[in-house]
Image 1 (cartoon, rainbow, N blue to C red):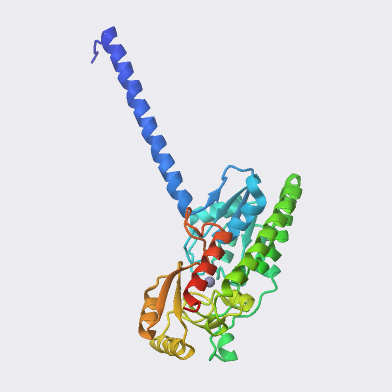
Image 2: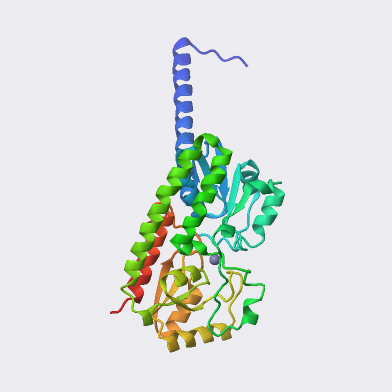
Length: 337
Ligand SMILES: [Zn+2]
């Protein structure tokens, strides 16, 4: 079939064709921009087009690397904001990210309990490019709950050492030269920049530590008692003189379901130590923590950041912001009234 189209119609058809394609292109652009914006909030991938690509297990490490690397490096965290790194399940996209990465920074000390080893194997990652930062902080054992004996600490659920060293800013200072040196090996032109930026960031961590000490002075010694969702605050306790009275989830990970006896014992400890509040963590469901606080008749606080940063745009979307938030929340809820 042949259709006769006069010139005027052809012009109008061309215009409509152009208009339609322009609209489709504009819609596609808007959709892509929205998707980038949404993904940015969920899984921080900074400067994905940078020549050097670094993958980290957690958002907290991604922030340290970004602070040191500035614009020179693209950093992607495998575990998104507000997600528990202990029980993370990586997908095919994560294998591709690791395979393409120049360096992979992890916490180690069993934080990424097994999933990281499998992921590195699936991505055929060169072991010399994988750095476990926990090996550089002089880690200490889990404290466990006060009435747990040594036998409990030997159970598999506790790693050999407590991986949550980032809750003490001065221990984080120890990993900055390691990150700077490894970035400098990969990108010798940037080595001096990395060293200098690591030094600046280290001084900010010193300031953060002094500020935290001042804030915690508002809490009398007998009220420096912590009950949290899981045992993520041993280093904070160690650095600032808190006692870990207990955790909702027993063991050093987030894997175990507490028994009715575990929960009853924790309620009893909260009462006998006169713990002022229960702190639920943002990476975990707060249902059990609420129940325990309710049964013990104490306050529940639900916004403590343990193993992951907060969402982009929140006051805890950087490591410094996260620690400041936690210090304020703990001081506010435990200080004398
Ligand atoms: Zn943890």
